[in-house]
Amino acid sequence: MSSAQLAVSAAGAAAIVWVLWYFLFSRRSGAAAVAAPGAEDGVQEIRVVVKGGYTPDTILVQAGKPVRLQFYRDETADCSERVVFEAFGINQELPAFQTTTVEFTPKEPGEYPFRCGMNMLKGLLVVEPAGTSRTSASSPHKFHE
Ligand SMILES: [Cu+2]
Image (cartoon, rainbow, N blue to C red; front, side, top):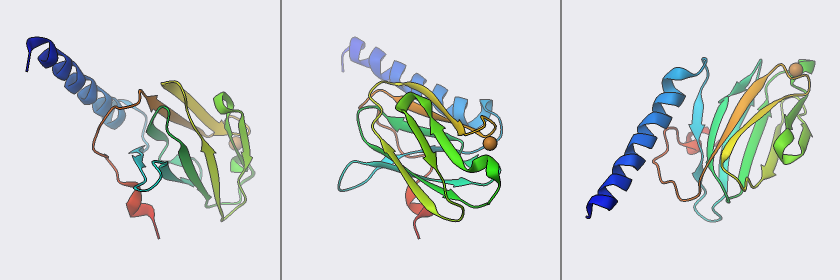
């Protein structure tokens, strides 16, 4: 390994540590989840429970790969009736006690807030550059029935 490669690896490791710290300790209370691409189609799937907020409220994905969010709305409160991802032109109704799939492919890395129709419930989609490899902090598979 050359010193240039070493420097790149060290920078990568530092970035990963920073991101983990950022998610685990610096945010308001709430869970963060890292999407793991599905085995067959590379879709990054995460299940989000909607009940007085979004759980997890921070979702980490990679750019350039399809994202599939499964919103399960576990309440009838009007507040959470819709979920809005402005950056992706999504304004989706979430029927109570049902799972609603929201799919899109983020092209550019960045932070994309999502929210309810009234801008009260808030979540954050963090899109990392493609090819960032990291072991899932939280496997989405544990949410599967
Ligand atoms: Cu609301």
